[in-house]
Image (cartoon, rainbow, N blue to C red; front, side):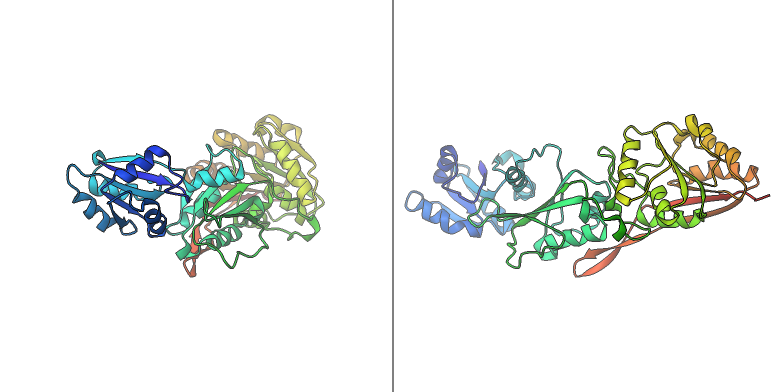
Length: 416
């Protein structure tokens, strides 16, 4: 039997008595190089066991396999050996039937303990020896708490900071840096976007990203349009479900916004496209409709952040309220689900002459369903696909990470 014991920085002194006894009774003890001096000092003359370096797990497994049937081995590991630790290799090469695991607190547990925050709903991702693409994709889903196991050889915390910045999410997350957790030189700090990474950064570090409402921007200092995704407040239960910056820019162009008139934003979500339209054309009347519970409050909050004022924000099914709205000159049809055909027909019936509807779609089935309706109405049609890429850090360079493609169906009504 080989006992695999998870430890903290104070091991072996900090181990419970029962586990200390297992170490002293062992015929072979394996431990990381950094733990060897403390282990040998602790053992003194109380054990005749051989002490091996566990930093080379392949050769360690050979030595463990050579133990006699009446001999016992102990492997000391950091934290939980079965969580990105040596446990996986031991199981693969020695078989789980010859192993007994005694986990210690993992770095993830220690990090959230330092924050004083429950972590049962936290997500985590490892960048050790991996490309950064999974982190980019995970951030698009806007998790409320995300632990990132950094790889110092590939950039460490700086890699995470560059990804946050290039994703436009610096304002949406608090970045906590944990160094040497459990050791005498442990350091925990929050890094603000403008704060430099410590020059004496410990290679034993990890990052925790905690979602938080972005600070209220100064509306007069914001770009006219094409705002960062992270500037918008979003639904807590559906984070990341919004029209991304690149698609917003294209939709605003396709709508060909007039100086004055009525704009319907149906299925408005966070309100991002309609609110940016108001920044471009302040004299437009925006009627934003979103049926999701809390959607109206969210859109109004985002409007205050951007310094604009919609004419009306309605929290209801679009089909139930369209007859109450003034006839539109421009329509953004972003929702509707199974009712999207009925919604588009209602838009066609109410649109003022010369009006334009822009419809972003995530799949070709929606295009096949809606295009014939515009054809039947004899509207001029344009179809395009928006496929954007964002530069993201890759080792010492930059890779282009693809975003989800969006189809845009544009219909315009003749002025006659």
